[in-house]
Every structure is written in C-alpha cells, then in structure tokens.
Image (cartoon, rainbow, N blue to C red; front, side, top):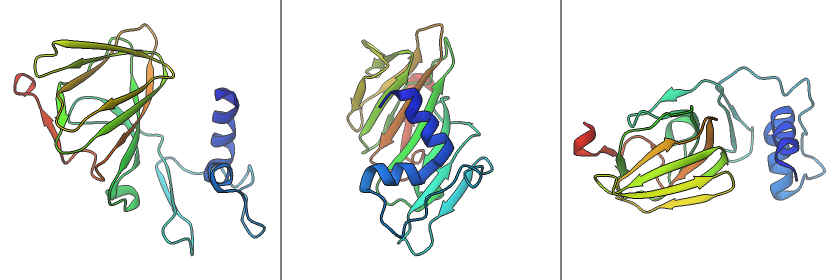
Length: 176
C-alpha cells in the first residue's frame, strides 16, 4: 500500500484500521467512523474489555535527554507497557542529538522520511548514513548520535526493548 494512502487511512480511522489490518475485523468489532476519529491531541484511549489494548494519539512533541524531538508513543507511562517503547522521531534540517547509549536496551529505528546520519562510538568515529526505507539496529550499550544531514526533515519510528524510553539513556562523557 502506498505510504501516503496508509498515512491517510491511519489518520482518518486511527487504531481500528491498524488492528483490522493486523488481525482482521471480527463481526462484532466497532469500526471507528470518520466523525468519531477526531480526537484531541495526546490522548490515551483504552479499549474497554480488551485486556489493555491502548491507542496513543500523540501530536505534541517533547525534547528528550539526548536533545531529540519525539512524539511520545507507547511507553510504560503512556500505555502500561512492560517490555518495549515506541516513539516517532522528527529531526529538523541540520539538527543533531547528543551522543548517548541505551543501557541494556536494543533499539530499532525505521526511517520514514529524509536522510540521516548516525555517529557510532564514544567519539563518533564510525559514520552510518541512512535514508527513507532503512531499518537501523543499534545493540544495547552502543554509543550513537543521530543527526539530519539533509535540507528536509527526517521522520523515523523508534522501538526500544525498554518500556521507559528515557530511564536508561546515558549521555557520552563528552556530551554532559
């Protein structure tokens, strides 16, 4: 499915489409209509009688300890996750975060838009360039520093094996 079409569907119909695509819509499922889908920013929607299925609608960014702009997604705090977190990252042109590592937590990043560069190592001695469509795996305890090397924004989805996405961030000594 074309990315623009998928984005439009998800924005218009929210979680109901995502769940429907992932597991199929049962005959008694409530499909959210277009008028019902208009929800305030940064809203948490817990589906009744679902065992904890939660939708997070995040439209207000925050700046993390590593000085990266994220739109908070699923975390221990937002949805009660116990093992993973997922956020949307937006890097404006020329922006770079601080060099850091995630103690004992692996990270996967999927680049949706733009061209990014990641400096690897405590001093940033290894350079890795990525573009839209790339998956980036960063093992636990590896120093890295994200940056936007293009004239357009970089948008990425970040998934970490840590339910508290900021608790185990350690800034490199040269960045503190």
